[in-house]
Length: 218
Image (cartoon, rainbow, N blue to C red; front, side):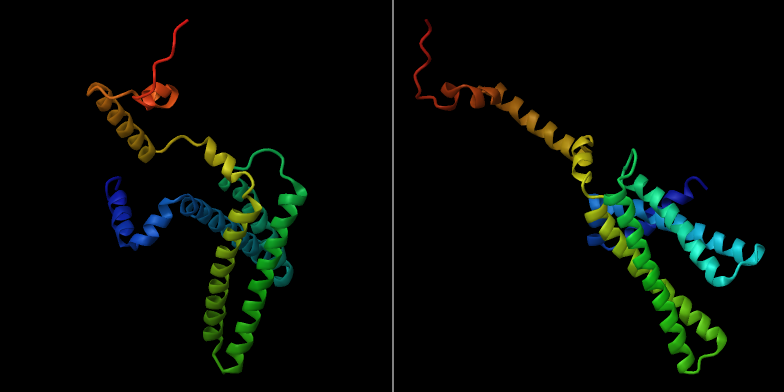
């Protein structure tokens, strides 16, 4: 099993289009992948809360839906701070309130999508099962739209102010290390062949200009 799973992952990765693979390797793509489990955990928390309230506590569906949405948003908020490497006490005006405003907007979109999907399904005479499947499909599509929208808002607006600082603090990746090693090797080869050292070309004007007179020693 330990050998089968990586093979499946590699096979699935090869099926991804090359432009998408390149994007996922970039900083934004890696952050997007990091945000996916956040949304999955938030969705699971809201579904479990809804099932417990409706099935066990016998709370009304409307109130249960509101409470479940709040629980899911709370989980999303905590894990989103982890996904964007936020530490310390959150800023209420710059982070907490905007997050809940975005969440409320997502709830509105999901509610309207479900409502109008249900109205349209009834108007065309769908059966109860067909109506359920149609509303579920509309809800899923709206969820995908709000997921991408929330990621864009979080990545470029809400959690963007510390992103550049964090990236500057990250270690140099393997590609940069290889490039640096090749540059150092080239500089060493030039020094071995009798060329001026790199530091001399930068710091010593005489090394930069062979025709320049040597400095007068006093």
